[in-house]
Length: 222
Length: 80
Image (cartoon, rainbow over all chains, first blue to last red; front, top):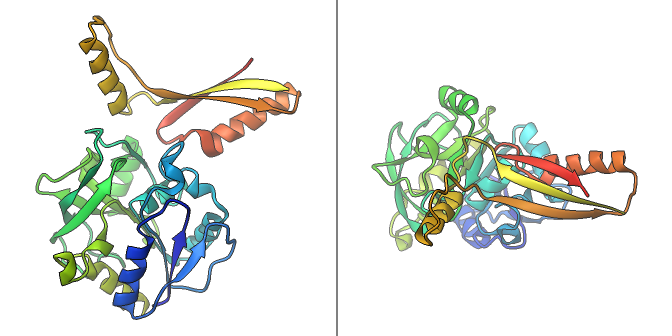
């Protein structure tokens, strides 16, 4: 599987993502700077976490308007897999590649802890490595992960199976509506999620529950 | 030159945890009878153009494309 990791000023989880992709796919991803207008020919594009542009204006708002995001949108429209984690999720929402918005955590606090995630839809390219309803461990670290969508949008994504991860066992850390932690696009090739699967892929991390996400992708796009 | 003030606020029905916290703090300071507080943003924009109609169209586009997230926010534009 060939992959690319998008880099923007203020993102800080890119190295973790590069390490995870390299270890699991056996190939180092290409890194693509925000000013690029073309992307290499890859199976997967990842926008990692962090604080692009210092979270100025709204989290992900400025990053989503950088030239590289136009190229990401074009690739997404062609069916290339795109995955945004944490700030990457915020960027995908701000870029209009996924529905809804992420607001300040209901507690107003930055949360950095482990949560339980339920696999709400295991029939996607991103979640095929998990069993339906499986509960996994996953770390979160964010200040603005409170998912919101208007009632019509929410009803639509729920009925279409676009909610793929939900905070489980009372671990919703941010007040997200319906405990939503991750969603996919209508076409199923764009995933956004607040938790960090790249930070739980080997024993040295204290667990490897995130690994199946990447391995499932690999099976699809190897 | 045209000067404009853009106000961006959360839509009705969108929960505003920051506004709620401010509301609580005002109560704590002894201000009674505060029904509710909603937090928003203000942008003061100076445009080199002096054509008012063009400025209004440009400001609206700025709001739609960057200054407001219309999923959760409304905006108003006042040219001063």
